[in-house]
Length: 158
Picture (cartoon, rainbow, N blue to C red):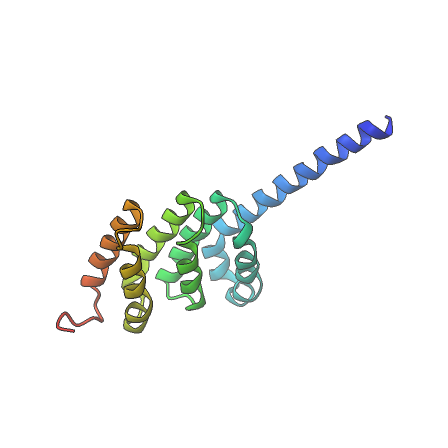
């Protein structure tokens, strides 16, 4: 094999390694709730920080799976630092990923504290409901308001 063909082969191998890494990451994310049950300390100290580190440059599929996994974790009262990740995910450029994060936020409204809703969600709803926002953002803000309206900790007279 000459040098040039070996170089091309190595490029193909590197791309296969990258695909394998992506598949492994997606598999870990899909199994995150089970990992949390078997070893919560390792999951919170090593796996979740690694996932958070990968998010800024991640693919749409990665964002969608992480948003679903975080939804499950937060419904089980996971640490509040995941809440801020969900809020950041809403503003990713990919509309499918942003929609997945918004669906996660809508689903976890019942487990959020009154403080989180008043300080973070109401501000987000106000911003996303502006006429300058896309229609899907305004619809999502209506869904958020619907969930907030029936939240157990909020007094309807406030």
